[in-house]
Length: 339
Ligand code: NAD
Ligand code: DAU
Image 1 (cartoon, rainbow, N blue to C red):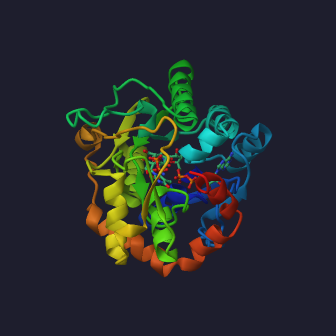
Image 2 (cartoon, rainbow, N blue to C red; image 1 turned 30 degrees about the horizontal axis):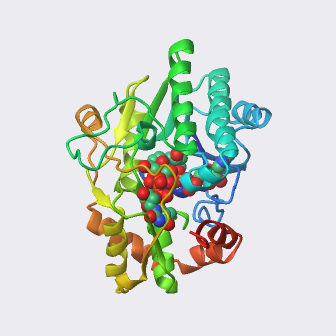
Image 3 (cartoon, rainbow, N blue to C red; image 1 turned 90 degrees about the vertical axis):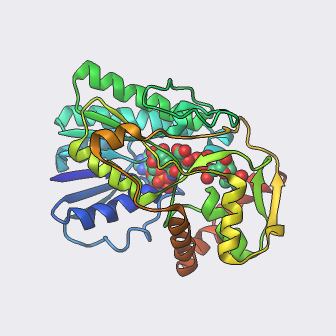
């Protein structure tokens, strides 16, 4: 089995590579990544140079490069994690989101069709469903919820999902899609809520909470996401969308307080700042289908996962200190200085 994993130098892609090496040591893994600001070769250090692992630096939207790569490697399975993934950046500069998330997906679909892969899996997000009101805790996203994106990021992910559906139906391709809720865990880039709050708290900097902090996200430990994708690849039905989430809804402010509590830092570090434009109020996945059809259930309780995550950032300071002291500093200034 040869699996092509795109975006493997990022947060979830790298965790997926580590997971697959543990669970399927006999698989050949080929990771393709453009190494944008979010891709980090230090993350992949533990697998570089190992047998059955190959790294290729390339852009998924580069058609010639992808056709050549697919021709050379002839993967059985493609798992597409590669994306521009940060909502705030998509509000600032949407074009690259369409380039990578939509056109990149189309190139991968064309290459997959041309070489006849056994399965193409698209890693999507619950954000394609838009948001839910705070005062309707009875409502959840199911696989049948209509797509209603709010940000350029989620619109680009929804566009990619629609393309996958169209290629599956038109060309009868073996495509599956998963839509997961917010992930947390090791190797997440410190622009995202949890690692940003850990890094700021450790540096004694203010913790910028957007708006009233009452927005709700449904948090899942990254390894549980990886396990769900592995299961979909093995047992999932072609043409099917699978929602992935663990019924772990939390207000942002409570997440931030939990991080401060674990680090034994004062809540006075919390600063409410101007809200995100078009900020989605609540995400909440109904994971009934993947549980009933594939038997998937999350294994990591939030209390354990968040403690493990904070521990990881404490134990791996050089990994994120290098990021926050480099060009990311300019982004942070732009995004937060006048907020
Ligand atoms: P990330 O930003 O940490 O990593 C993205 C990776 O893709 C990076 O290594 C980057 O270099 C690479 N990449 C970007 N553009 C590329 C291109 N044109 N060609 C090749 N590689 C490119 O993102 P993440 O949080 O790991 O998310 C991975 C996937 O999972 C994305 O598709 C995202 O939409 C989806 N997702 C993320 C979450 C979450 O909570 N983080 C939840 C659900 C779904
Ligand atoms: O739901 C899945 C999605 O989760 C993925 O598709 C995205 O790739 C991923 O980035 C994530 O999107 P969010 O916008 O939910 O994640 P983020 O970590 O950026 O923000 C989480 C919440 O915290 C959101 O309500 C905004 C808020 N926030 C975020 C930052 C960075 C703050 O209050 N302050 C901050 O500084």
